[in-house]
Image: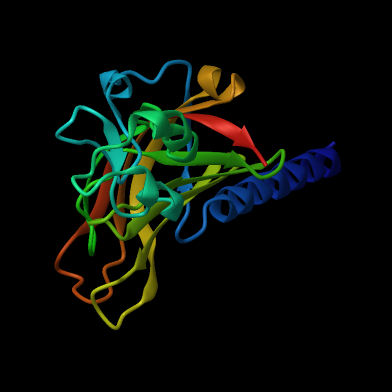
Length: 221
């Protein structure tokens, strides 16, 4: 009987050690464990806001026009004052995207060359991994990238500087949290609250962070 009890305690001890080992290995440096919730709460009304694609604007003649990164073909469709010729309107709007783009992120951040962003793209790479990344614009050159794999999220900030010699640099996550609505996830929608702090290698005393909300359809690769 004593021998049986010894074996039982030994097995329990091994299982306990195994469970402890798995738990310690589950979340590594730079990773955040996802909190899967039945319902992620908060104000997601920002999804009702929209913008035209960048470079699209309403000119003085009340027409939607394009200035900046635009198809070169449209130059001959406008007069010297920038008014689009009436007989060129249909052709113009076949070349220029003027659809309403609804916001998919609301966030606040301290990062280099960051002046705000309203859009993210979420792509399911395979059955286990989904990538979500913010969009840049004229003033914002830092991207938030979330790699979601099973129950882990790996947040990084990628800086693609256009005003310094730094060029491209990656900042890893030190700590934080992310809550994802599992019911929306199963429907192919990423609905999340997040708050991350990153390793600011240039100045550790200056917190580098990114926090906010995401609501975006998940596209399949």
